[in-house]
Structure formats: structure tokens, C-alpha cells
Image (cartoon, rainbow, N blue to C red; front, side, top):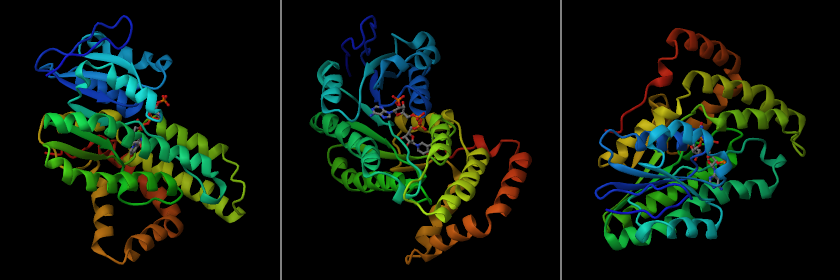
Length: 329
Ligand SMILES: NC(=O)c1ccc[n+]([C@@H]2O[C@H](COP(=O)([O-])OP(=O)(O)OC[C@H]3O[C@@H](n4cnc5c(N)ncnc54)[C@H](OP(=O)(O)O)[C@@H]3O)[C@@H](O)[C@H]2O)c1
């Protein structure tokens, strides 16, 4: 397929004939960074990766990790998923606007009692996690439909399938994308365009650090003392435990993405087998009572017990659970 125009001054990277052009959003850190690097380092050089980020001042970690693939199978471009202009400029800068694989990875989190979060902050989450992804898809999908080929990947979350206490707005944004993708995937099949979702559980990235920092700093104005207490002293310790015991690495998620880019993927790709029963619980009881009460019990009645068992699990498993992933195939 495809040739790419120079995107960054000084970068001479171009896709070679036969290489797939893969555009990834949010590559300055975490999952996006590792996905970009892993695909660019593909031994068979099957991909030309356009690793995008909203602020190129944050490029150093990516450039360092990309090593000698930078300027060869990996090029950099500016892209802010919240800006029509930025998205258009980036896609127009690609030769023939040809993108074979679009990976919508950019996303932001938000935790806290709903009554303490200004609507403006919630809108930012939807602007990025929902409209940011839709904006990208709107820009790239028509060309894919015309060409009768392409692959769109959306990094959703386990929280797109099961809500988690104090993550109400973030979970709502990921649920929104699940519904959007379920609807669009059917139409796209008619055009031979594949749509797939990646649903990670907790992953050790800046996301986690930002979440912990945010909880500690949040004053929670407007929330009553009991709610603030549940948030800071019940939810936060459980959340840290869960990250420590069940957290995967960005490389684990990147491996899933390389696997679904290189083969005919499944629609849904849960990356962490530990979450399969939680999702199953939801569908086992159509009244929804089972999962709501199970989560209530886990958090408020078994909280301290969970801390002890999570700590025990951490030492017993020596981290081996943390690196296990399900291969989508
Ligand atoms: N970490 C987890 O536990 C976890 C679990 C499930 C799903 N996910 C999902 O995985 C994806 C990646 O998250 P991560 O864990 O790798 O977090 P991360 O390290 O915080 O990375 C998020 C990336 O998104 C970028 N971004 C934010 N707003 C943007 C915008 N308007 N335009 C372009 N890029 C933007 C960030 O760029 P800046 O550097 O400019 O901020 C950063 O590169 C997200 O969609 C997240 O919801 C994460």
C-alpha cells in the first residue's frame, strides 16, 4: 500500500510498498508508546507506524524506545484528538490519506465522587475518550470504506463492560465507546473494514500514577464526609492493591495489539483473564443485582480481608499473574 509524506521536519520515514500504515494516538507514554515501538520493531517490517502525540515536547521517551526504527518504520506526528484542525492536518499530511490501521489509544481517566467533580472536567473526559475517538474514526473511515479495507482498533477498558465505584464518568465514557463500536462494526463489515476493541484491566502506566495523585489531591468539595472517607480510605487502598496484584504491563497490552493487527481479530479482546469472571457475572444475572451486590460486598464488607488476600496473592504469585495475558487467538 502506501507512501507517507514527511510528517516531522527531519524525519525521512516513508512506508515501503507492501507495508501497512498504522496510526496510533497518544504515544507519548504508556500503552500507546509500547504499541508504537512493538509494531515498528516487527521483524518482518510489515508496518510503518505513525506514532502521534498532542505535544511533541513529550517525544523523548518514545524516540529513545524506538531506537533505530525512528525515521525508518516509525515516524512522529502531532495530533490532538480533541481538535478538528489537528486531526485533519495530521491525516492530510499522510500520502493519499492512506491509513490501514487506526489505533485509538489516547485517553484520560477521572476518579472521585460525582458530586465533587465539575461538569467541565467530566466533559473533558468525554471530549477525549468519546468524541476524540469518534473524530478520528470520522476522518479515517470514509477512505477505508472507499478502499474496501482497513482496521480500526479502540482501546476501551474492562470498565467499558463493568462499572467500577468512583470511576463513574470514566466508565461511562468507555461504555459509550463500546456501544458506538458494537453499532458501527456491523455496518463496517459490509465494507470489509474491521473494528475491534481492546479491553485492558489495570495497567501500570502514568494513568495509574495520575489516578493516585488525583485522589490524594482531590478536596472533594460538595461531597459529604462519609463519601470522602469511602473514596480515600476504602476505594483508594483497594484500587492500589488491585493494580499491584492484577496490573499488567504496557507491553502485555502491546502484544495483544500486535497480535490483532497481524491476524483476523476478534471484536472484543479482554487482555486480563482475571477479569473474565467479573464480566461473566454481569451477564449471568439479567437483573444486574448480582454484580452490584457482589461489588458492594467486596468493597465495603471484604475490604480489609481483600487487602490481606491481595497482599498474600502478590507474594505467592511472585508477579507471574501480572504478566499473563490471553492471546486473542
Ligand atoms: N492504565 C490503565 O490501567 C488502563 C486500563 C484500561 C484502559 N486504559 C486505556 O488505555 C489508553 C492509554 O492509557 P495509558 O494507560 O497508556 O495512559 P497514559 O500513560 O496516561 O497515556 C495516555 C496517552 O493519551 C494521551 N492523550 C491524552 N489526551 C490526549 C489528546 N487530547 N490528544 C492526543 N493524545 C492525548 C496522553 O498524552 P499526553 O502525554 O499529552 O498527556 C498519553 O500519551 C487510554 O485510552 C486508557 O483509557 C488504561
